Image (cartoon, rainbow, N blue to C red; front, side):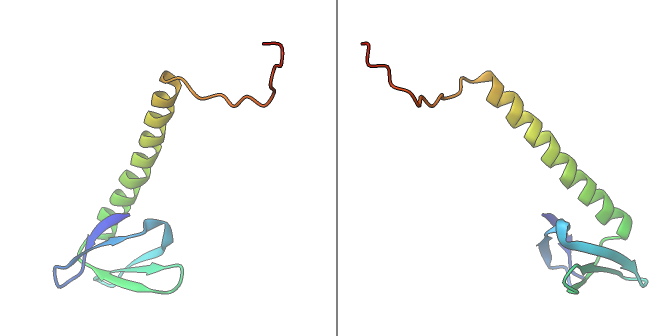
Length: 85
């Protein structure tokens, strides 16, 4: 989610995966895939940068999790029982 500002100054979080397009009319209008429209104070260029940064942070975070996960021992599920002792 990215933080944006309505024209009245109210901040809100937007799921950027649902953005279909950004129009400049001259105000910035974000249209979601379901047709919902948001009029925001940020420029189209700023919104695109926020979306890029958000998606890059997800990739960086997943890389951090992979690195952290490989450094710690993992649990192993045993499906066979040995009756010999």
